[in-house]
Image 1 (cartoon, helix red, strand yellow):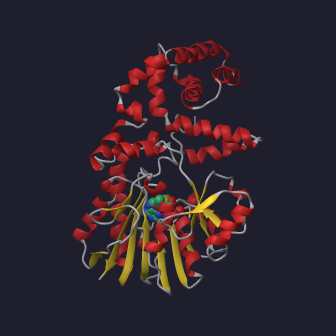
Image 2 (image 1 turned 90 degrees about the vertical axis):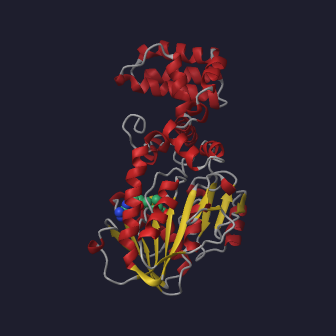
Image 3 (image 1 turned 180 degrees about the vertical axis):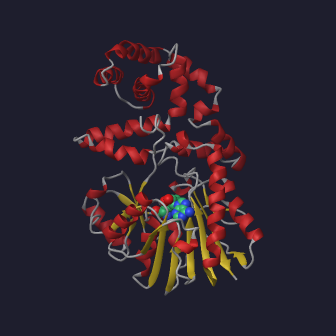
Length: 421
Ligand SMILES: C[S@@+](CC[C@H](N)C(=O)[O-])C[C@H]1O[C@@H](n2cnc3c(N)ncnc32)[C@H](O)[C@@H]1O
């Protein structure tokens, strides 16, 4: 309800809702239902519209959501049909809407009977077939004409569960042994030096030495950032969009206290997440809660050797982890985000030392947010040189490298590196 009706993010509402369920099996099933409905929303909603003779009143949106949950189970899970229908009908009672029981029962039974013809009705709609909004499909088709179908399919997959080993505490091989001793099947990542992917997701508390700071959860694509910075032996690093702190922590884990890291984020709530991350990992950064583009508010005048701008973006590369992006994001958001990305680059570039490097990153596949931003910046800025990234991961673009969602099982990510001459 919070996501579909109130426009909240899944990350913002789900943890509290799940915490209300004492049994871990119920929590896991509820999570599967919520992610599943959001992942397949653009497929389920036209089916529901087809099945209902008239829409429900706005105050009965909860019943529409129950129907989506019921339909999701019928279409995508192996829940026995009678159990899916009975549980959804019973949930009407729990919402004090016993009047809806007949409607829910009839609609779901109708969905079972009309399975074939509902599928056929959807075959002509790319949005329903791929479970994505139309504007997004068009944007991906335009930017990735040879890959758009694979990208949309990857967005509907379950992502891998990948860890970053804290090299200050364990080597990757040592940690792999700890996992094996604890009974978890896992293998090392191909491209990220400190990554391990588990065959199945695990609650973090069950991971060896998680609370002691031995390991963090982070996709392999995101782990590439710290290496790209080519950290110097000493000096000052700026992580301008730091929260929740995954990349800040990775930088600090690699530099064993030799470098000073300034980490900034403009979201107060998210700065608190960076604090939590650094505390758990026993790492220290100079943390500012402010808008990084308002230089006078936070900068002490000492230029940086390296700058990381992990820019706010559409998140189009991480939809498989955040399926609510398909519900919330609009084309207008992309235009607004491009302005913010340009502003971040333009404001922070003067703070980089001559000879220093800046890594620009997004978890987006949209060219406007990636090569579009970087090429415009390079064309309008003095003393900047594109620093080629030689790598085996991703695909070379005009200005950087793009990992397409699902490539090497990684999240969709873009990186470009700029050098100041
Ligand atoms: C992609 S996330 C960063 C993820 C983070 N680097 C990590 O690896 O955990 C982008 C972040 O940029 C922050 N942000 C957006 N605009 C900003 C600005 N002008 N100044 C500082 N932070 C900003 C957002 O609050 C958000 O936390």
